[in-house]
Length: 378
Ligand SMILES: *Cc1c(COP(=O)(O)O)cnc(C)c1O
Image (cartoon, rainbow, N blue to C red; front, side, top):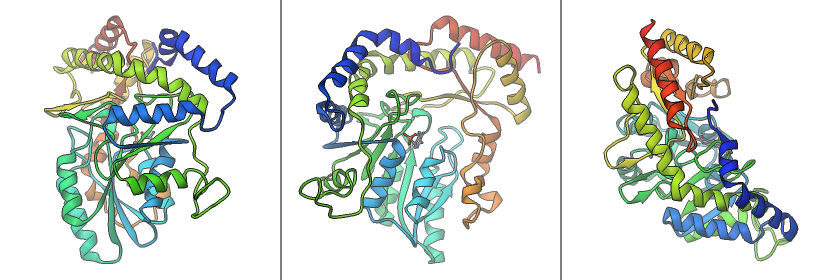
């Protein structure tokens, strides 16, 4: 059994993907070919925003937004303590300081109440200027944007949605990657919508930001390629990756997103009486980047993971370490041990199960019976 079966997806879409790749190779427009523009238009229309600016990966997408917002030394940016490293890395890379905030135990996303306390504390201290919030749609479920947009407004902060795992999710009628002042996603192969290498995108309704991002993506270009008006990056999405993403996007919107939701519902039905299954808030839809259960203790998790491994069932621990404990952030202030109780507990107890649109019902059955046997044997 595969944790995320990318080969099964390729087999299902092989004809379209092979054709798209060959056509792109034959056409020879390897950089910013027409597929890139078409993909950007389709992604913006799907998400429901004015602009999609594709780029080389999800980390660059975040970095470019922070660059365009002028975030740098002396600034504080609030980031969840429970996320992938890049969400905080980009803040330090921009020269600002990430201030990590604990998360909600049920959704794994930023805890808005704790966030407000941190904003007030940093304001009170007065050594750094609160500038922005990076909210993460962890494991596919959008963060609590109703509360986060209110806080951003109240404290004059920019809100950046890190939708690397969230693409395809929604809150009511609003889709992930449309929240805040700008949003980003990643097309890393294992993300909900993945390509065959690295890729990413920024989404925004802000015309001026979009224009600046299109410049920053190509060495800060001005009127033409050899007119450079600002310091930028080289961060384009390859034509080949755009060509792969177009048929994958169609499969994603037509049926893959429904299938992962069906798989998640089945897991939850079969597991809810023995472990803590993931909670999706009322009115929210997840894109199930991960299906993550919470066990009772680190010991129980270790035993369950070992028992599943013995039966050929792969599982992953996302994430084993809180952001504030990463060595790269060791020099930052704000890391008193009692500030992150939920993240600490989650890192010790979470376990992600196989999840992808091509997971078969009998595979889900196998995972669930193995898990039940392992929990009951303890
Ligand atoms: C994967 C991921 C990123 C980074 O995306 P890359 O395309 O790998 O650079 C950023 N944030 C989160 C939450 C992610 O899961």
